[in-house]
Length: 147
Image 1 (tube, rainbow, N blue to C red):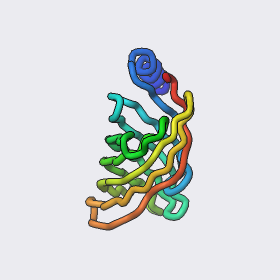
Image 2 (cartoon, rainbow, N blue to C red; image 1 turned 90 degrees about the vertical axis):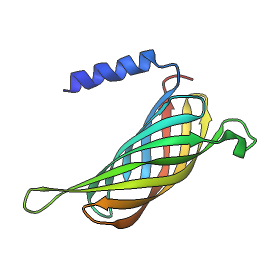
Image 3 (cartoon, rainbow, N blue to C red; image 1 turned 135 degrees about the vertical axis):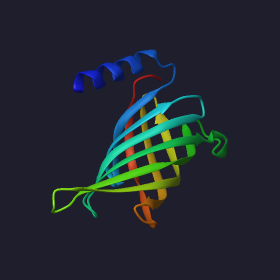
C-alpha cells in the first residue's frame, strides 16, 4: 500500500505543470497539509490532522478560488475555499464514530520562492449523523516542489 502511494505521489510530482505543496498546519486540527495548484488561480487542498480539543482525526478537502487582485502586492494569494470534512473517533467499545460535514472558508497564503506560509478560517456544518456547527482554522507552512 505504501509503495503504491509513493509511486502515485512521485508520478504526480513529475507530471504536473503547476506547483504541489506539502507542509503542516497548526490549529484546529493540527496535522499535514497538501496543496495542488490546478490552474494559476485554483487549487485543491487536502489535510489530515488531529483535534486536541475533541480527540478526533480530521480528513479535509477543499477547492480553492484565489483572488490575487484583492491585494496589490506580489506573492500574496487570498482565497475562498469550499469543501468537506470527515471526523473519525474510536469509541470505548472499539468502534469508529464518523461525522461528515461541509466547509466554507477564507484564507491567505504568502509564497516566497518555494515556501508558502498561510492562515485560514473555516466554519463547518456537520450533516451526518446530525446537524452541528464547528469552526476550524490555523496557520501553516508548505514546501512547493515546483516554482
